[in-house]
Length: 184
Image (cartoon, rainbow, N blue to C red; front, side, top):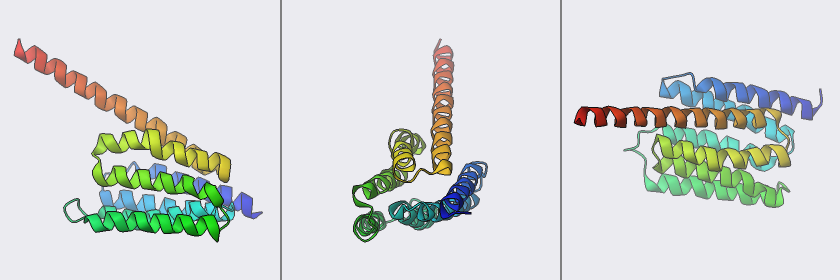
């Protein structure tokens, strides 16, 4: 098999791991599956010639470990440090890795995702995923390193996010209707 074919196979394995992570209610298992998926995506991007995507996914593992800490234990310096490391990896991949401007796509996706996860509630994270993270990774996966598993994974993520937002909106409407009926 060629490196490109192996890249596609590993991207599909990464996608399966990421998708399966949503089935775990246990936070540790969720992040373990997410981090494992990131390892496969990193290998995939490396095989497909996308140094920036590979680095950002490897750094995503570090971000996952930091995010496992409870919100009260996270410090602002950790947030700044993560983003400085993302920026350094972007500069490295843009110059030494030969990625040029293309490195900015994976940097932007990781930064938006980190900001949403760090400061957002569940809904803010989903909106950030839908309008920031997924579109940026989708662009990266189609234009920079055609990653079949990455494209399908982002499609699944956007569909799943839309379903979640509709479900939450439906619950909110039902709760408001119940309150209105109780007020009568």
